Length: 449
Image 1 (cartoon, rainbow, N blue to C red):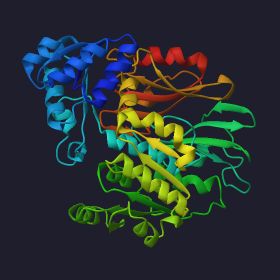
Image 2 (image 1 turned 180 degrees about the vertical axis):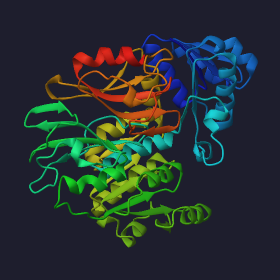
Image 3 (image 1 turned 45 degrees about the vertical axis):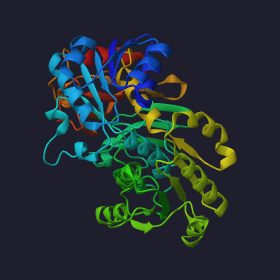
Image 4 (image 1 turned 90 degrees about the vertical axis):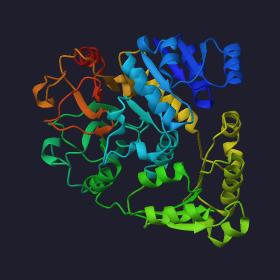
């Protein structure tokens, strides 16, 4: 595929490297002559020196015929303009990297639709999703997050005296925003259907918004006890804000340590339920005064990687149960991954890597993205982009004759991700996440593509 990248900074350069290694035809636009020369010498990509928000430069780079335009500069406005112009010129799929949450707010205007952009990616928000997955449900099923964290996958054990025992799934009347994907009984896993009857000791895998899944859990485990989770965030920047938004349930008791007075005031007004403490968390005295040792999670989220590492090390020594951190510099990632056990750090996340992984999913040559497999290869969880000529386009889910043992668990269209109902329609360009038997996967792809 022909891929045009605007910006050869850390994210753009990393994408150039991995996409060219997958034998895509990659071109990159970079305004900094020195950086452009460096990429030209070191990577097997075509380099165009110039402004990525210029129509003339975009035409020269072939934006009118590219399959993907990836605007990955550090400037939001440049990325928005580049994608919008490229779309007007005839580019296929456009993806813009953004930092300002303003552009994700659709309450007044949908910026994504207005500028004709297919996907908006916020690196810090994507990294926050990785952190939230660990915090919200440590035993979470190993499936990629759906819709950038809007839909979660959780597995519940059916305990003794649960109200669901002996009942068919059709009789449970679960929240419509929740879908049962598959049921594990012993070593066997089966794709769920309306007639599946639950038994004690089954394991049921559900898809839905995190908070709704938490609310339905007592149906499967009547003795579930809700305990408060104490979380301390070091730094009140974009990543912290994104993480707070993902941890909305009252059981999460969040404190933010932030040194900047203005940012503290902003956070306190924005999130009244969050405790904001002004101070320098690199100070051992402050960590001791705030009893960081009693925290369930301590997470370093500042722009300074060294500070994140040292405060996590201090928090771990003080007794914090779990420590995690954000790493911004590319050359630190591999080193920190190797030192996690020594430092007492449980998870290291990188906005750059999270963004690149998301882009790779969209640019895959495969007819579908395989997110996970059921035991004994009985089924697969797949993500499929709906083609313009798919036989399902424009139809409601109830009007479609799906392959046997197929469950549609998520529908991603533009900026909206949901567990679809029977009256939801399939649109061209949307992404469908489904659980399907291996032998029926090809039929499902044919229907949607």
